[in-house]
Image 1: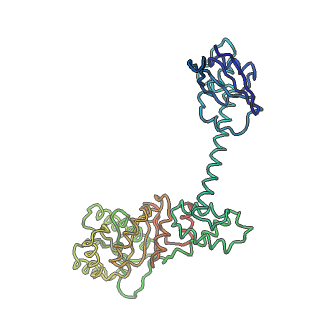
Image 2: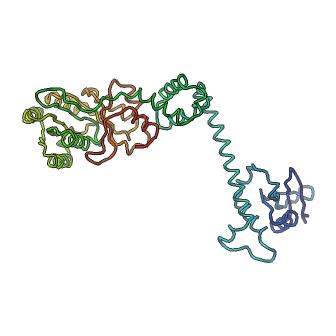
Image 3: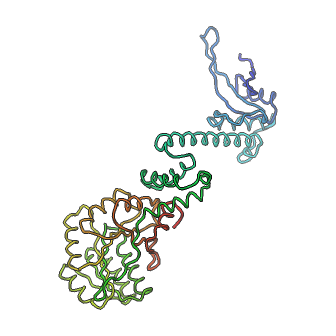
Length: 405
């Protein structure tokens, strides 16, 4: 028969007995009702020259004042620890309190608090080590105060080389004693990002006679028709311009119906065209308009034939400026593919849509930084005419930094 035993080490006591009940009784008699159970386990022991194997219960515990702050073993078996604590808090001869009452005991509260505290300390250590590992491995040239800013730029999908470029400028221009001022440094980062984002300003009429003709092109589903409606509404209602609308999107009846409703509300002419000759006639019929906006069908960047057809339409219309519309919710690979393939149609500016739906906006910076193109507009929702803005470098920089829509 196994005799109960107690061992003392570093202020903690290890109790051993044949059963859990005997072991708990031993803990309670030694440490009283404020005992905190740190670890329980079943230990195999061999007797009779190793021929007989028996199992005993082992509990490591201490009084509330003696328990060390960090003890990783606490988190390993919370269920056993909680059970033991409840057993200790229950007077002899009485059944443990049911349900929620178990959670109200002082011993369970001690166990929960200690386990949580140890979990938090462990996570802090791991995060700090991970931060050191990443910093030393991928960005050894960054000081400690700038590393968190670097991490956030990468988190917002800013390309690594751009993030480093921006922070090198910060290191050169910000005094060392100001590096620890997070908000100050973030504003300086926004200033640097603003310099990297070319913007063109709004659509402006450039001719004295005839309409200024603007076409929107881009992949399917990026919001070209809604964007056309927003531009038309702003030109008509806010700038008091005479606007005509043309659509060559004969593939989607719903898109035509949508644009027709907007044209009726605005009192603007709408022409639906199917051939290059049709579009020439439509533009001629709108000679008295100050602006003509052309909505095009969505094209797959991989459909070379359709892109060639689109190019023919725009040439027939005599377009003054063409805007590539891309969604900010697309990944960088999709946006770069669209930019590359629609480059055959020759666009002048970029409109980024759906900023309100994008999780990260670093792709905006990455794309425009690699192009000799500027951002004309961004859209931030579905409301016509409100949810569209002229591209502004500081505003986009703040969005890239996650400073809200």
